[in-house]
Image 1 (cartoon, rainbow, N blue to C red):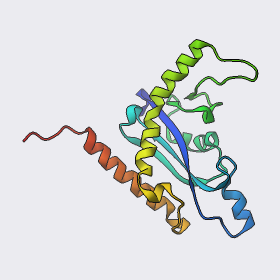
Image 2 (tube, helix red, strand yellow; image 1 turned 90 degrees about the vertical axis):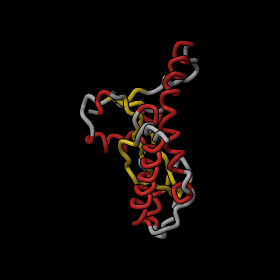
Image 3 (cartoon, one colour; image 1 turned 135 degrees about the horizontal axis):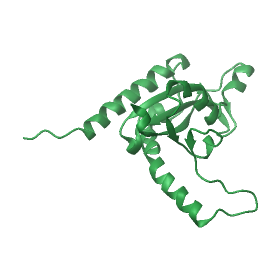
Length: 172
């Protein structure tokens, strides 16, 4: 049923307390954010109508494309996705054109990138709705084994609110 849509995928990171053990520190350290993080991947419908899938609590050092490849089995082989430059390299994901070293991208490619980003903004807005809750945006200070429960509960609240926003208003 979802294969008729081009789903939008993006990842976000949340800071967490630095683990005491050095080996644990290496696993949670994100070179991108220069801190210890947990990573969440969101897959949403076009226009940000609903959250289709959430992959919660992955290690901070996991790259976005590897995280997507680990969760790809949940969808059919013909399912198409829309992503940012972090997802370059997968045939199922449409990504923006990247400027090569010492060259410029053409005006047509710039226009295509603009159209792609205007469709992809829905996932950024969905992540923003989740991060309105401070427990999902600030440093996560609770016990790490509770992280999945907390984030999934917040996603449930966001989905509840979205469905309220998109439903037909009652006539009075």
